[in-house]
Length: 327
Image (cartoon, rainbow, N blue to C red; front, side, top):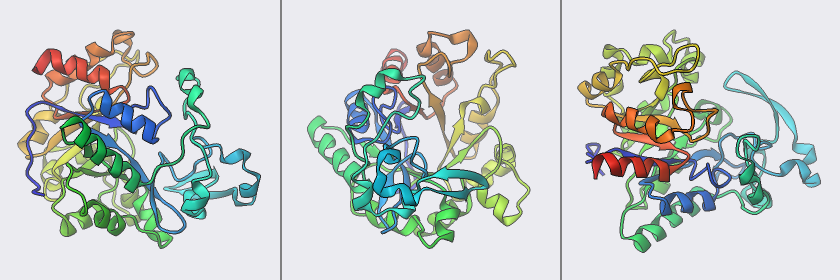
């Protein structure tokens, strides 16, 4: 697959599946996302004790599974430092795939999505292979190609404990013929991947903090530094897109209202980088203060900037607005 790619209109990337409607990172969430019009489904990838790639938002899984009620795993509860943060709980790298398959997923933010708790205790943790099989099946069923948009989670950490993600990921992805993007918040692993693959790579950029590999390597640059015109040209040497916190495209004032847009979309395009913005959600808790109850209005404003893709928890809302503007 070539590193060069084009899209006629912005792509809709289902953020952890249709996670506004089903517990995130479950096959049910991914399948619903596809049925609602998503072009890509987005699994965050962590790894098991026996080297299998699975989809979880974090390697600490007490917030997204029922592991706390499994007495047989009580002894595995522990404290670790992950990317500089103290985490207490159960970690995927301490359990085999067979053990993890005995767990059931649950809604991660029940206080905001109480309706999703109806699905707690039903779905298992999917492997990357199972997600790919779903995308293949739905592609045939619907007559359109469903893409995979995996994120390598905590690559420096997993490499440090002898469970690197990258080679396993590439070996798996090379076996399939689906659209693919590989994304990461770190820089070094994307630079290494760019030497091993022609698959499109996405440099994730937050609106605060810095890549964890920069912390480890003593690099003083922050995410804010990566969006300067000079640094965007450097990013384009190993990546084909940037996946940005939408606040970097349109900041908010102290009341939560949208301010004027920045030049980032134009600057990135000038560096031959696509721009995928995250994360779009329907709940007022996440929406700008001046767009409460109006998620369609938020999409319209950001689509007007000329972005190339959106990561959304509600792909049907994104699709409906997209149809109004591009179809």
